[in-house]
Image (cartoon, rainbow, N blue to C red; front, side, top):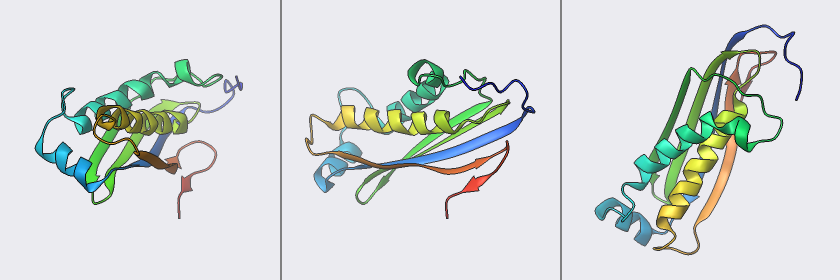
Length: 141
């Protein structure tokens, strides 16, 4: 792991996003009939939050940090589901990996819940949107 012991503690925030592309038939099914596993958007949200909390267990050499906030949103779009994850901490290292892990696992959860209905689901556009705190801020243009 990288030694961050000499870094200043500061509030760090990261936002990541991703998309799950679904057919219009699958979207209609999700909106009108609950799946046997429940509401996929809510379950994906919870899965993403849990994943953010477990990032250091999943990604080798990733620091274990205390998270102040994790929020995952999922909303239906014309071509599928748009996901956003936000992670916040007061730490010596950033939370980009936590936000990216949250959005990735949320997308995988939607995939899992929809795979019986549609076989050609696409998970795409997982990316960091912004980060603040630490040495340099970043905002996707």
